[in-house]
Image (cartoon, rainbow, N blue to C red; front, side):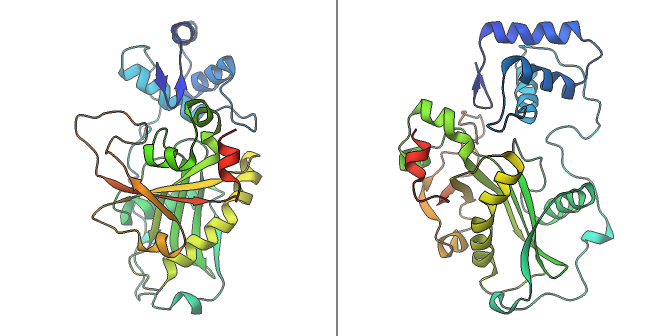
Length: 286
């Protein structure tokens, strides 16, 4: 049985059941960390993949394979952000400066709780998909001019199976399984609705593509070699990604990031890729 890109044997499912039964007071966080340790489900940097494990266990619970304790937090995984604070309200005047004239434009990583809450709220209030927790290893950014937030980025785990992407890379099932962590998904990109700046989107995409590999290395001890994103059609046409030299490789089939058929198909999306290393194919196909 496969959950979150990992195959679970019957003995491993039984092991998880015993762990839950033997620790009736344990919460979901403790259980997910312990399961990662027992199954050696680790990142390339040696950290437990407890976020992916929690998602996998929740899906096992929904499928009736295990019985998890009730979540202790009232805003459990996947819930929308309910914050509405003045800090995220629209300013009194709009920002109207061409990208080439913006002073001190830079990307700032989200590094503390206050920044995280503001990022979540802005995404929830102004991005058409709203806020949901990013899966797995992740980085979030504010794009700022001096201290003014203009835009936001969110990067997380890549999709498990995307036929046009996989064909473009040329890897097989085992190569994808071993190297999928080297592909990072641009899950959110938001220019705030009061910001009107010619060519800002493509300039920011260029900036983040030059910075993210170093930032990922610093946080997770390995370097990604490719970015991916999915642009919903016909809502958007991907002009900014094209201008920033991303590569359009095809369209999704509406099955979601895990490639599983759904009763109600998701919107069709264009698939865009950006190699971060000139030898990305050799690295991903090892």
